[in-house]
Amino acid sequence: MLRKFFSLLFVLILVGLWIMINPQPAVAQVNTINYNNASLENRDFSELDLSGVNFVAAEMRGASFQGANLTNAMFTKGVLLNANLQDANLTGALVDRVTLDGANLKNAIFTDATLTRSRFYDADITGADFSDALIDRYQVSLLCERADGVNPVTGVSTRDSLGCR
Image 1 (cartoon, rainbow, N blue to C red):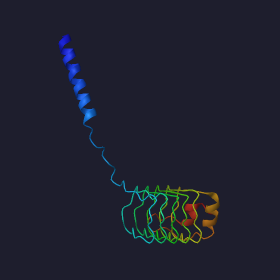
Image 2 (cartoon, one colour; image 1 turned 90 degrees about the vertical axis):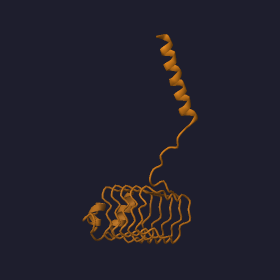
Image 3 (cartoon, rainbow, N blue to C red; image 1 turned 45 degrees about the vertical axis):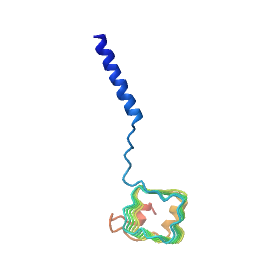
Image 4 (tube, rainbow, N blue to C red; image 1 turned 120 degrees about the horizontal axis):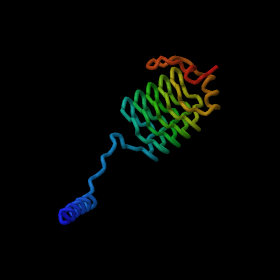
């Protein structure tokens, strides 16, 4: 009986050593592409599925994301001056410390997105849906001054999604 126990223990130790010596690669997530610190001026990402993609500290002046799926994408410390995000889906996206001055945000969907410390000066937000998005109070007041339209996908008015009075 003792011999069987030690034989089984020996086999388990060998299996454990084999696993440690011969590691298998981890399974990668589908969209592990990242454009961190990339220079992406005037790039065309229109209609692409970029869900979960990272754009941390990327320079994206004049880039087009028209109709792109940017669900859960990460845009932090980015520059999207005069970028085109018309009809883009940014549901659950992190847009922190991003400059969106002059951007085309017509009919964009920002539901459940985090848009903290970001700027939207002269951005066209006609029909954009900001439902349940986290936005700095000061930016909300500025956005409400020009909020107009209804999002064609969600059916929510821009003013209602921002909580404008």
